[in-house]
Length: 130
Image (cartoon, rainbow, N blue to C red; front, side):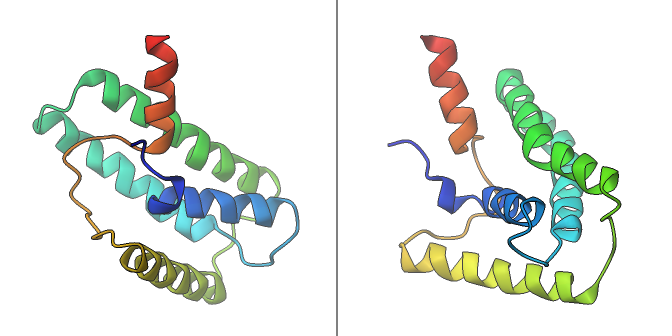
């Protein structure tokens, strides 16, 4: 069964960015995107150390470029890269809701993945096989 988008917090943040960019919310995802990107960058050496396939690491980098770096560039370009405590609080609340969503759906939060099988990586791999 392919992985679900709603079980990956990065996609929640990306959806939040889309709402922010379209003006549907005043809460800025700048802090969440920055933390998520930093976590991903710091995680790359661990992926290499634990010998994840290079194709998976490359796809992981490409997907995260589009769902984190591109939104951050948009935020900087629109001069919205501002730190507000209300945005940090919203990030924490959203993360708690995300954890609750996982638990409601019977998914154990696992922050030490043994494979890089996110929904977009899964879709790209299916396209590469076709």
